[in-house]
Image (tube, rainbow, N blue to C red; front, side, top):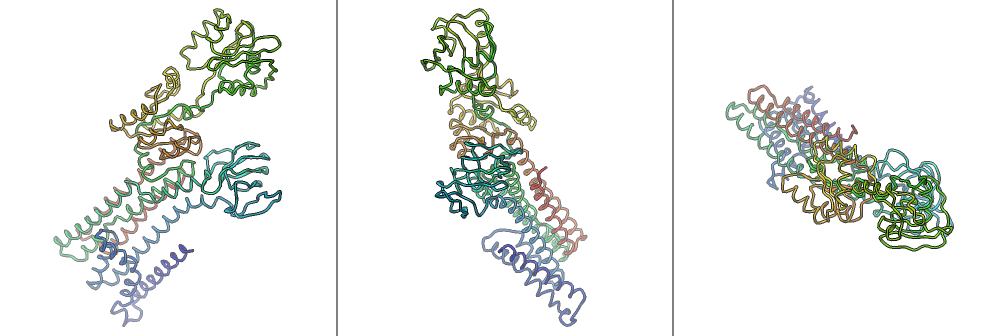
Length: 613
């Protein structure tokens, strides 16, 4: 409401000044017009906001465009050119209105995120459904979400199934199926079925709430390039004064002097830079990339070295069965069924991988009669009078299992594979080997390829063995691989790169990555990152898609290119304008027009960043 009133006041002021211009031009009421009374009054009233800012600049001993333009207007009034003063003020006011409108429109793109949550929600309390305000929801409620409704809380589905559009949070383009036990996020859209959700986080504690909080802080932060823009704007004002003084000293023409003062402006830089940063933060937020401040958006655009963690970043972080090798006439399904029978109640991660594969291909497991676990080695269980052994090669040898030449050759070949082999034996005979590995994300290879195309050196750092690290590095074709890295060693590597004038982005997800995330110029946390990693990072991905890093770099570089264009474009126009004024080819009216048009061009140049390309 306040913004609407503000625009109304500005529009009324502009309309009144337009009427004053028309009356002055038509010389209506000759007595008043002869003294340019209307033009003088309109200039003083309409230009009041500009004069107020100019006075504040003097008080703070700061050079601003409002101060230079106020001096120009006052100069035209002192020499009796009231109509010109009115036109200058009129143009400046229009430019300010357009600037405010464009910047406020940019902010609204981000503010729309806040409006995604519903005001009223349906909950079940004391076995009764009731509609309440979102602010009154508690963790003890059961939230009922109908098709087409926004999900208001983070929580777990306790009843129902549906597909949910998570693009506003994770940036995923396709809806995700949600069944009992699945996690849902506030701000996402329930599409098909009714879901009953038990809240786990509400309000500002939700993923959506954290995103809003980060964006609000980011919008208020000032990037170094924005501070540079402020300094450049002040210097351009001094440049305008210098140009005006030189013009007067050489030409003694007050009209040309005022024209030089008017035409040289830094408004496009002063307004365009924060708008470009705001647009960049808004664009990344739409893509599920949460940038914590303008400074990090700027730094990301300058990055030339990308350091990647492996587990949970490049890989899924979940062991999976990648191959089953059979021996002694057994087939793959037989080997998997026997292994799953033995592992069905184990909590070991490798057992989980075996059971996941058995479930995937619908293998039915048998019951066992007895079982013994040997931590770090394997297990032995009895099933229908047979002794089933599942474990590593040393464990099987200790229990007198025979290794024929095929088994020995296979194990020798797999030494450098980087995969973990679980051997399966029945009594004293090896039936097969199940290879388990932490597999690469689907987009990992193309994402690394794109990062290198952008001119970045890509480095893989991992705590895994050097063999595993090298294998992953070969698949990804990274520039450098280092394995068996402790958190302190990762930190020291980042410091070494910084000392060699590299601008580094570190991508990770674990507690062990936190020190390196803090030390890097830009720390990027994956969507499933630990709370510590998210706190330590400067940029957070709402999901685990590595392509989002490429997208973030592209947006940040577009942002820097726009700001650079605005910088040098302003310098070029100011120089050309002062030169024309010096040569006597520029009137105050034309100077004001050039000033306004150039400012509008640079503001619109920044605003185009809001459009996805």
